[in-house]
Amino acid sequence: MNPVYAPYPATRLRRTRQNSAIRDLVRENSLSAGDLIWPVFVRSGEGIEEPVASMPGVMRRSVDKVVEAAKDAAAVGVGAICVFPYTGLEERTEECAGAWDPDNHANRAIRAIKAALPDMVVMTDVALDTYNINGHDGFVENGEIVNDRTVQALVKMALAQAEAGADIIGPSDMMDGRIGAIRSALEGASHQNVMILSYAAKYASAFYGPFRDAVGASGALTGDKKTYQMDPANSDEALRLVARDLSEGADMVMVKPGLPYLDICRRVKDAFGAPTFAYQVSGEFAMIQAAAMNDWIDRERVMMESLMAFKRSGCDGVLTYFALDAARLLNA
Ligand code: PBG
Image 1 (tube, rainbow, N blue to C red):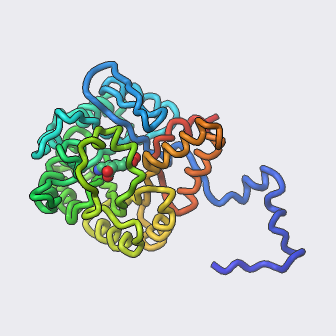
Image 2 (spheres, rainbow, N blue to C red):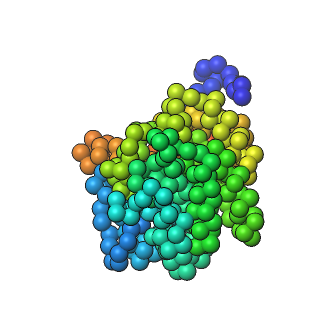
Image 3 (tube, rainbow, N blue to C red):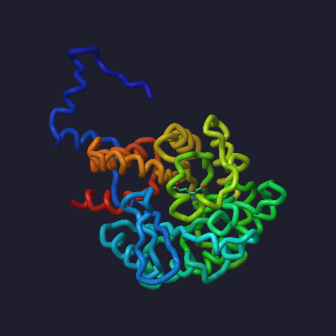
């Protein structure tokens, strides 16, 4: 775009900023509760809400409490929720069989949310890390995170989630070929309306630290995820990944983390025009919360500014731990 305007003083760009009604008129982007997906952590037990120390304000909840939380989300206009399981070390194995157990916490939570709130859009996480004894997203054989055997397991995991009533399958594992494999399995099992939001451009990021506490993976993870998650130095590769996942049947794509990767969001949206999401991840959330708790920043304003930044960068929506707080402010 080449803006055409007269030189000063014929053009004074401050004219359109002079009061709030004018600013409302010329505003280019908007944020609403409907743009937000709220990640929640589900654990075993009943009546439990336990705080995650590194994510102030975030809870791990038993299934009954997750249902209550989903009702709170619906009440403030957040129409989508993403369920992540917390698993203790004792629930993890090398074979990761918990991942496709129809009765694991995540699948029980999906069923319970859909039973209580049929219109709530429920998204899942597809990756083995929350069931894996060594914290990796795929099977580990002789120190290697193996691709093809992992994809077969991810397909079983995704099918169990679809059976439980999930609306959006969220493969976060970064294995090659998983989108096509999951899509054809869903078609084959009459789940043609179940969507896939692919974590297409997911970077090997230190910003996931607090999340790994939340899901119980911090103590479990051996080594790093650099052989499957992206190198933060790369940008063109993100476009190749998005192109690949769309060509295999992804309905929507994600860039993750969020704020440090807004350049990628913009490139992805411009290149493909597909529904594009960013994940404002645990470390981004924790940084804002920590600074706000020290009174170093204005929490509400920083939260809203950070979310608007995603819209401005071309995202259609955002996964954010701020979803409920932001929605409440937007409704106020
Ligand atoms: C794992 C997964 C991760 C996140 C979502 N799914 C962590 C990882 O890849 O190690 C991170 C979310 C966050 O940091 O908020 N498959």
